[in-house]
Image (cartoon, rainbow, N blue to C red; front, side):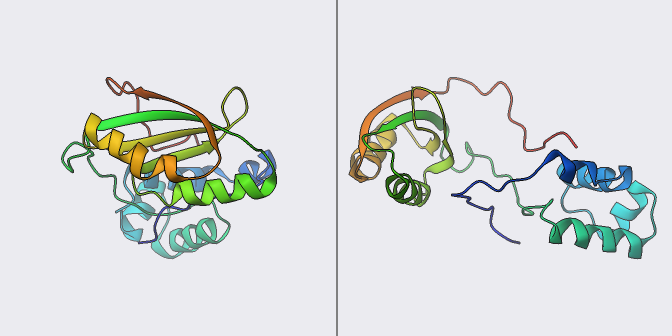
Length: 170
């Protein structure tokens, strides 16, 4: 199983890419978003194909980059990481070198589960998973604030998750 990708540079895709998908391709993608552990035979049955054509389509979807990875979604609470914190960061410089280096260092931190370079008042929006408020303070002092270039940060603890999808519309 391949690890989830960490992109530092945007991958440009166009609406034309999505239009190249036919309904069977879309059914395959929807089925895999629901259960990536389906065998090719199960997937083929679900989308109305025989096994070989289904396997061929699946390989094409992988090769063309429609499928990034097959992953297991883990329960943060069970793993002792019940706290989710959203951090907004502003850097003191915005040149390409600074953004690239900061992004690499930020995404190397294991507590960081999502990170976005954004427009607006903040340069980055980051989501971290930690065990406690004290664990978050340690993360800030020992890891995040040691990355050079942060001018300002603002943190918000998530009280409750209202919606968490791992799928996108296909």
